[in-house]
Every structure is written in C-alpha cells, then in structure tokens.
Length: 240
Length: 270
Image 1 (spheres, rainbow over the protein chains, first blue to last red):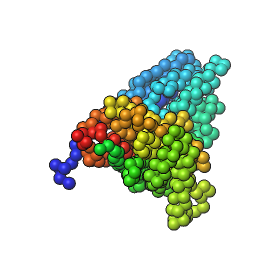
Image 2: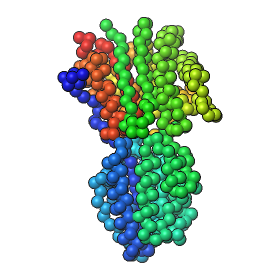
Image 3: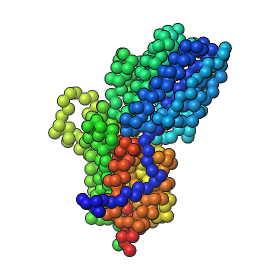
C-alpha cells in the first residue's frame, strides 16, 4: 500500500485515553507523627510517587491519578483533585499538634469521592493506601460508620486496600478490617527508615496488580511474602 | 435497493502484544440469501482459568452467525406477533447449545493436558450479536461490551437492558452453567424505528473512550459518517479505530468493533 492509499483516520467520539487508576492516600497526621516520622513519611511518599510516575510512563493501560487525605482529629483533603502522578509535586504533610488518629472521618471523605457518578465507569478499580503510626482513636461507632460508608460504594468495596503501619504497635485489628482480606497483611515499618521500603511494596502492588493478565497470586506472594491473596482480591476479567 | 451491510475489525491489545499473548477477541459478519444479515463480536476472558478463551470467542461469533442465518428468518416469521418470546424460548437455548457443541468438538480434537473440573470454563467468552431480519432487528448480549443502535438523525439508544452484575472485573459468560438465562436481548421493530446502523464493540472500545458517557457523541458522529460514506470507507476505517483503542494510548485491551449498516441511509445509494 502506498502512502496515497493510506486512509485518513476519522474516528467518531470525543477521543481516547488510557483508563484512569485512582490512588488515594490516607495519611496519619496526628500529633504522634511529629518530627522524624512525618519527615520520613513525606520523603517516602515523594519517592513512591516518583516510582509510580516512572511506571505510568512505561506501561500502556492505565493513567495514575493521585489524591490524598490528611487525617488527625478531623480529616481534610491534602490533594483534593485527581492529579496525574506524572504532574504531581508532593507538598509535605504537616502534623496536627495534639491531633488524634480518627480514621472514620477519613474513610467518610474517601467514600464521598468514590460514590457512584464521582468516578469514571471505565476506571480501573481504585487503590487506597492507609498509613498510620497509631491505633484508631475514633469516638465510639465512628470508625465503623466511616468504614461502612466506604464499603457501601462499589468502588470502595472493590478497591485494592492496603495499609502501612509505622511501628509494630500500630498494627491493629482496625487496619485488618480496613483491608478486608485476611490474606493481605498490614505492611509494618519497624522504624522510620523502613517507611520508604513499605511504600515501595505498596506502590508495586498498586501498579503491577492493576496490569491486565497479571499473575496476581504470584505477585502477592513476592510482594507480601506468603501465599498471598487469591482471586477474591486481585482476580479480574472472569465470570460471575 | 435497501439492505444491510457488515463491517468488522479486531485489534490485539497493546498489553497482550507486550506479553506475546494472542488476541482473545473475535468478530464475524454474514449475509443470508433471504435478506437476513448477522454480525457478532466476542471477548474471551483474560483470566488464567480461561486459557482457551481465544478459541471460545471465535466459536461464539461463528455460532451466532451460523445459527442466526439458519434459524432466525423462519423463527421470526413463525411468531411475528411476539418475536422476542420466540427468540428467548427457541433461539437462545439453540445458540448456547451450539456453542457448547462446538467447544466439545474442539476439545475432542485437542484434549486438555491436565484435568479441568469444568470443561467449558477455559473457553469462556462474552458475545454480542445483532441480526437484521426485516422487519426485525434482533440485539443479543451476554457479558460486557457495548451495543448501540443509531438513528439517521444521530440519536441513539442501547436496546439491550443493562446487567447490574457486571462490575468491570467480572462478567457473565457463555461458559457458565446458566448462560441462557444471563443472555439479555431486545427486538427492534424496523417498521417503527428508523435505524441507520448498529455498533457492537467489546469493552476494549468503550474503555478507551475519554468521555464517560461516550455513546451519544459516538452515535451522532457515526450517523453523520454513515450519511456520507459507504461500506468500503468504513471497511478502511474500522481497523484503524480498533488499533487506536487497543493501543497504549487507549484501553490497551483487545478491541473488536462491528457495524451493521443500513443501506439506503448512506450516500452510496444515491
């Protein structure tokens, strides 16, 4: 076929783009995070986002959009709009003096963002990454209310939910309930120097397990160091 | 002269190409001697348990075209008052059984190398089918994907009812035990509905569209294009559309597109 024979493309519709992959960070900014912890966390998040940006440019099926919630006694959007990871410059989190670790309000905020109609129908299932250094301090019933609201949305229920605990004491039943699958472990950073490594694991889980055709059980085995979650968590494109 | 023309295209997804995997989509069109025209697309499931889904998809579109041409004209003539009931009660079970028999035939020639608990599961596939058997346009679907009927004025509608069970990760399938019950269908009366064309596409197409509600825009554009171009133009364009949607700039997924064009709408009849 000569160049003259090549048809000129005229495609119907409003154009095409890669499928969105929404990553929402839920970052603990309670009073206990002050000093070295928050510095290490900011460094680790910036590093993780840089790794995700490299992955974003290298693969051919998803465009990563990042949002972040900072929570202490209250929860506020730190990055309110879905921002392409390749365009994002991380603005450091600040700890809230004497702030508590109320996770329920953060879940509520994310639930609103993932409500039907607020996220593209063609989006890959979102990823939620909860990072905390302490036990939940929500007033009675608030943790459950927030988590239930999150899990009531199809996107929240179907999301890949991961958690990083800073310090062994932060590993709690509450984090397991957020994850919602006993085969997905809480990623524990024993020290501030471990935070970056744990976020790398989380970002690998977010990126590689979103890839079509990925052997998710094998990936989970490699990333989490055990049998890993099965199709109930990472399976896709199979029958009901 | 009026009638129906078919154009189809299949493109391997960029993600599949990067892994060296074959395309698991299929598309087929066929015209009968009695004015019935059938087109179908199918999307073989990507999960590892459906390791023969590329074959399952091909068998699905073949079953749709062969059984559609063979069965639908007489069936729709025989029960002209209630065509949808006839299709549901007679054609749908026939279609599923024909696909299962075709799978069994393939399996007899190429047995599994290791035991498989449910022999149909490896062949799992969706199926979207449209058959123009005037005065009826049958639209049928199991699993995800898009089926859009476009009027000459550019308005469009999805004839097949949605399935709330489809969540983007899991889909209904020809390989499930109750496949016939999961098939959704609609019969459009062409005496009452002015139809320019029908678009059938696997989810690689819809997932590539930038707009979330892309159907109205695509429908309007297709109606305009159909008014100005004939089948040959679409035959040259469709592979390009499929390639673009399947590329790294789109969904990266296998993409099948089929058009059922109503002759008498486009300029090629002038």
